[in-house]
Amino acid sequence: DIQMTQSPSSLSASIGDRVTLTCRASQSIGKFLNWYQQKPGKAPNLLVYAASRLQNGVPSRFSGSGSGTDFALTISSLQPEDFATYYCQQNSDDAGPTFGGGTRVEVK
Amino acid sequence: QVHLVQSGAELRKPGSSVKVSCKASGDSLRSYAISWLRQAPGEGPEWMGRIIPVIEVEKYAQKFQGRLTLTADKSTGTVFMELKNLTSEDTATYYCAGFGSSFFDSWGQGSLVIVPS
Image (cartoon, rainbow over all chains, first blue to last red; front, side, top):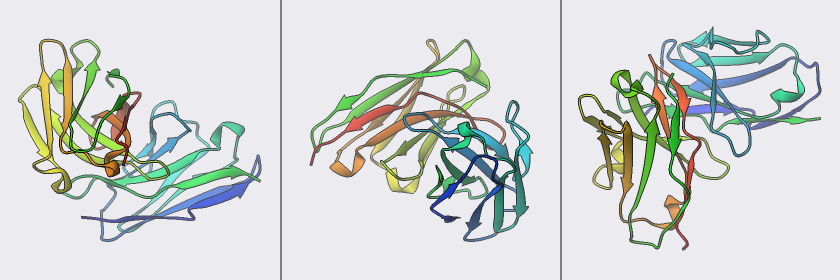
């Protein structure tokens, strides 16, 4: 199975900050990488698919980049509603999709 | 996208089974693969398997082979997840999710399953 490693596991930031979350795959996955946001008690919500394509309705302050094994999700100007946990997910492995352990974005 | 509504929370004894349902709106199941995932507290989601209801084809993660069964009732647009021989390590929130081109774009609200140790 392809392992997904996210860093940092948590970070503290302020409103208006530029924040970058990273995700590394244990082997090359091309651009088969998706990002989700999850708030407490809710299901994950798709933000970015195919590494850099923004899902319909997702604010443009979110952007994704990368290919191969290294990926990033950037929030250009953190808003109050962005405090949440973010997960990356690969869909390159025939064995099935796998998720990273998540990055929790907290208020500084 | 498809709208998914799951059954409620379950409390089960070790060694028993649980069956969770996931009902899709309209006739959306015609074009969707429905996956089941689970999420233990403080962890990322874990993919368990998926079913394509229109052709009744399933695929299971190796970890759950032999213990997990996914079925579908096309007449009601409902898919089911049954997990057998439960242990405390199966305590988690279980989600059904619609799988678009290569991503999960629709999720049920989640069903908490508790298996006391």
